[in-house]
Image (cartoon, rainbow, N blue to C red; front, top):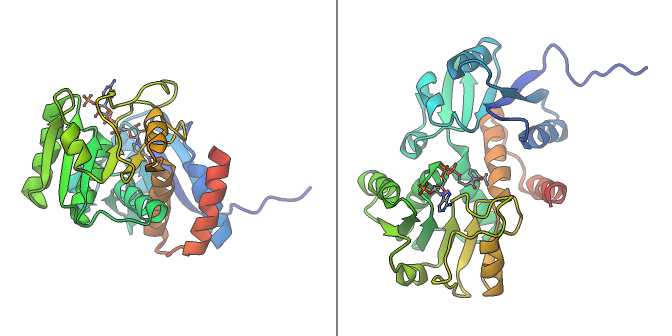
Length: 291
Ligand code: NAP
């Protein structure tokens, strides 16, 4: 019988804490990267069944090199860390923690993952662009802050609960640049919709199993030169993306965001810079597994 030697006493620990974590595909991504680059680490999902504080202390106590944080702890975890990055503070959420000699540092790689996926998959950037974002939850705040940092000219934030959109607009206008406005989806917003060259859905509307739903009513029609990004990755093509595709728009789903947030976390933990060619190949395999 061959003895399994992939994990030894020297193997470093990475992981993800949240509840639930059983569905997470991050272990596939991180463990594949470690194998391919020859980094001696293992990535394990850890469901939080005691308090979040104890889970964080436990990972620090066993000297994990770093870990991801997922629903519902991305905001709450910040108070148990030694330091949070400036971006993470503006975004109000941490999804990646790095342990440096017993001190825990929080980062938000969801936003970086989104931005990297957008660049890679559209070949475009946010500099000087007018962007219409649907939603005002945790993902919206991270994405909207990132887009503002990356030089958008105007950001419209449209949400069912307008007050939440206004809160995010205030954060951007007060801390980055006065470029954000909230939009009431129920009032006529189609003018500002057509004024935008990039449309992003950050609501959960259209996510499996409610695949027949769209966050936009028929009042909103796409222009064929608009880029439409949906943060949802299940299904691969939401109703929103299907109608955008029909109108001739370039469309992207949220799988790239998920992929690149993981890549970015891995690079933060290990200090490695993963090669572009390797990442392109890995992303293809990741897509094949998913679609
Ligand atoms: P969240 O904080 O719960 O926010 C949910 C958003 O969806 C809010 O704006 C909410 O509007 C809106 N919404 C929910 N049900 C609605 C309905 N029936 N009609 C209209 N609006 C509705 O969630 P989140 O963490 O921001 O996540 C949002 C989406 O992003 C999810 O689909 C998630 O899968 C996706 N996401 C993807 C990635 C990735 O890596 N690709 C990462 C993070 C999140 P109200 O404010 O009015 O309630």
